[in-house]
Amino acid sequence: MKKILKRMIPKSISSSVRRLLLPLRSKVKNYSIYTNATTNLSGIEIGGPSGIFKLKLPVYKSCLNMSFANFSNETIWEGKLQDSCNYYEDKVGNQYIAEASDLSRFSDQQFDFLLSSNCLEHVANPIKALSEWKRVTSGKIVLIVPRKDFNFDHKRPITSFDHLLEDFNNDVNESDLTHLDEILSLHDLELDAPSGSFEQFHQRSLENYNNRCLHHHVFDNVLVGQICDYLDMSIAEQTVNKRDWIFLIDTNH
Image (cartoon, rainbow, N blue to C red; front, side):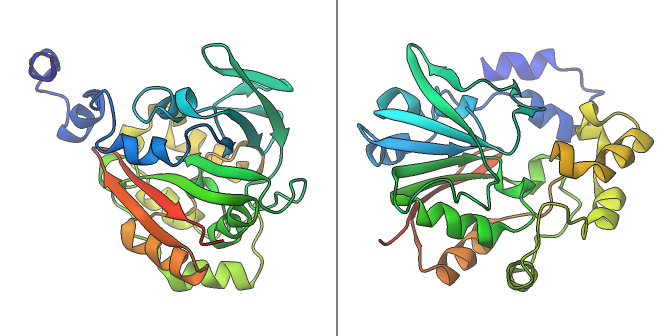
């Protein structure tokens, strides 16, 4: 099937765009390691529901139940949120409004596990966020962040841990636009058609507090490992696929 799709995509399309048009495998390699850590347990997802947890990494199918936390009652990705949502077949979960870096409405270790897919890069203070995620979770965190080489961040450098630590120590909040100049200069609009023209993208970026579309930071496995070390967590498993880094993180409670 993949060979057939390759022949169907015009050669005139750039190699970067061609890569994005090709599908991922039906399931993530070693997916059972991740689902075994969440089977028959109660979890929360920051953002979402996310398509990857339905099929490619089928946590929704095997978990006991899910809750979801989004920064607003209406997002670009999910539309207008209700108090509950149908996230897999007949499974229904509660929707909560909470910042990724402020889960104060939830008690310590309230959930058995936590999910996050393509969310952390949208957070201005990742160390603060992961500290909160650790606090509300008694077990594992399944974290997915995009690989920069396969999205519109491919021209940007990997963010340094020292920068993230400075953001954490300064208690940076979601209104931060520290990286805006870098983003405007290096963001590849050819790979981000929904952003429109440069002028439209610039205006949307200035309103990021309301829409949360910006990728504040750029991650790889080394940077995620440094954050985990700082927060006394450990990476139990990591998988790399065409577009994402996938981590199973032990909160070490």
